[in-house]
Length: 78
Image 1 (cartoon, rainbow, N blue to C red):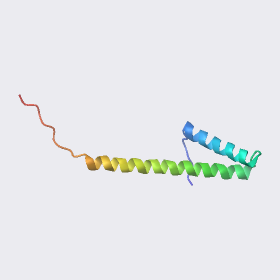
Image 2 (cartoon, rainbow, N blue to C red):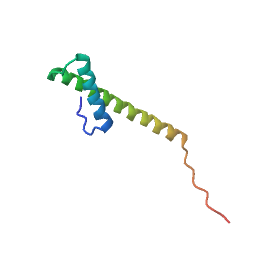
Image 3 (cartoon, rainbow, N blue to C red):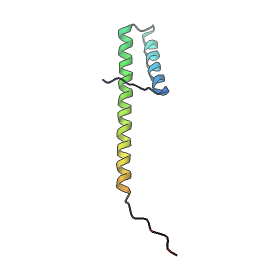
Image 4 (cartoon, rainbow, N blue to C red):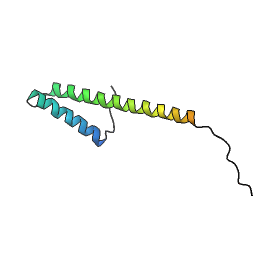
């Protein structure tokens, strides 16, 4: 897995919420190995969401390219 460089505030909040939910489920503070597992899982979900968004944008771009046909603009004539 590659390192996520620039996290948005929403992604940071997602990671914090994942750790907090895991701590609530465990009923105590997580030890380092468990915390690392939760963080890696949250980062993997963020990476998968980023990939899905880029694929969705690529499909949208393809759709726009298929619909668009260029034609020479008509010049104004008096």
